Image 1 (cartoon, helix red, strand yellow):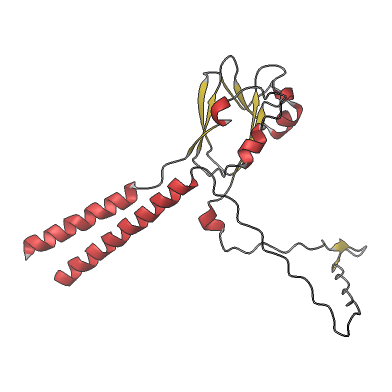
Image 2 (tube, rainbow, N blue to C red):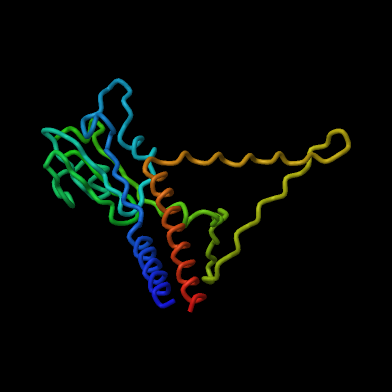
Length: 218
């Protein structure tokens, strides 16, 4: 009986350790896909910002810049708008740069070669919260900001006027329901994270079952 309890306890510990170590690995995105980090051609090639919008970056993901005779600069918002390369936050020149997105918000990248940024070799990578954390959270309804009177107290925003019904065949017209927006396509790298999360959940469940079995046997 004692050996059985020890065996069950050992299996439970192993499953718990496996669940902790099975966190989803970061997704690696090759910037620009096959063309890499180059000056966009003038024949309608997709811009880097269009490429970035097709993907959903999360904290910890990696941007892989492939380039030759070029460079990658991490810059501020103002330097991005002006294509300024004088005072970058970081400069990379190795030809195979792997940049880890270590926080939320936008990251601004430009080429360090003069004239390349002006020709479209720049990108904004926006890092968002994981979809599992934002799902089901209702968006705040837009409203008019309150106006401030001379006395300093805010005046409530005016409510919108009611829309009168249109006279027709004797009954009031009903508003046409607005169709729900179609879900965004799943970004590359997200499916692997979801699969690993499911596996991790299964392993944790098995570990809990093992611990419960241990106490039952005791």
